[in-house]
Amino acid sequence: MRNAVSLAMASSILFLGCGYIESESQDDVATSKQEERPEMVDQSSENHAEEAPDSPSYPFLGQPVSYETLPLNDVKLDEIETKHLVWDMEESFTAFWSIYATSQPPDINFEQEMVIGIFWGAKASGGYDLVVEHVGLEQEEVYIYYQKRHPNPERDYISMIVYPAALFVIPVEQSKVNFFDRNVIRRD
Image (cartoon, rainbow, N blue to C red; front, side, top):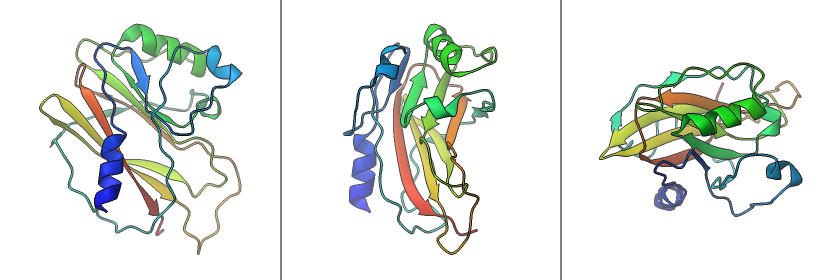
């Protein structure tokens, strides 16, 4: 488990006034679609599902921070690659929203808030889900813990392409953001 935490810590990102940044990936593949979009740096990592206890097996870092979930029903999730995104500037978030959403962007005060996006990409059944477990702040660093939930092999799920994602606003401005994910087999 110590290696999993080290791996998760290695996928943290640092930004100060950069607009938005994606997380790094060893499978970084440039596509012609990507050239049309604002410049991005990818930092995502894909792991295999493991059975995990219901409670986290790692300690949460940082004092809990409240966050507001943004609706994803107008966002074209099928066009967004697997990645972590962080926006601390209105211009970059508005550019992203104009490319991937069909509605007006939500009102965000980027002088006091930033937007976090976690996109897991296309999955083959309704059994996949992404759940934010904890958002914490400690010494000007944000810690985001989330679960990648995989289908329970003993259950049947609807066969359809799904795009697990989370998009939320935190009341923090320009901080280092660290992402920690864990793979969990659904128990429901």
